[in-house]
Image (cartoon, rainbow, N blue to C red):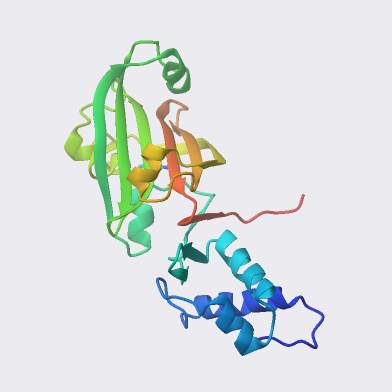
Length: 241
Ligand code: GLP
């Protein structure tokens, strides 16, 4: 596990070695790890070194701590490419997970100036406001609030938004989303969000704001969402100019 002859910090070697055990499946999600004292005695290194290694893995989302109980292996993160536009339903199905939604709010409202600007419609035009918890295998992953122009996406119902909005738009209305502008910001869960996402107050979330457009540039949706930072990571392949 650790080679003291190497010029590599001991905490780093230990963290790497535990990470490998997680990646290979030797340590499984939910499994508890040996205590700091056990690691320190077994490997003959200081408890500080062990703590530093475990802290790094907790910070990177590989492990989590439960007060008074110990340190456990976290669930694997969902790796989401930043290129390409996919719906939540497609994302989960592609990973063999069962997508579902808990509908918190569904209402036809007059667009505020802010929403109207994003959807490029007149203020007070009818807009569907849809707030959903998105779940994978019954585990809450994200909270999404969609604003959708009712004059564009006609006939949206609670039943439809309990399934896939994108599938309805594409299959029933022939409205294909072609592009989107998206921002991602790190943030902390508000108490009500934490409760809905089943995470602790102030746990990290990623706030994603998306405006998606049809092929002719018409905005089709304006979405504000909070994704669990302990369950998601985003990847992108980049080129040097
Ligand atoms: C993703 C996107 C949202 C989009 C949603 C549609 O979560 N970030 O902008 O509204 O997918 O998902 P579905 O078609 O499953 O309703």
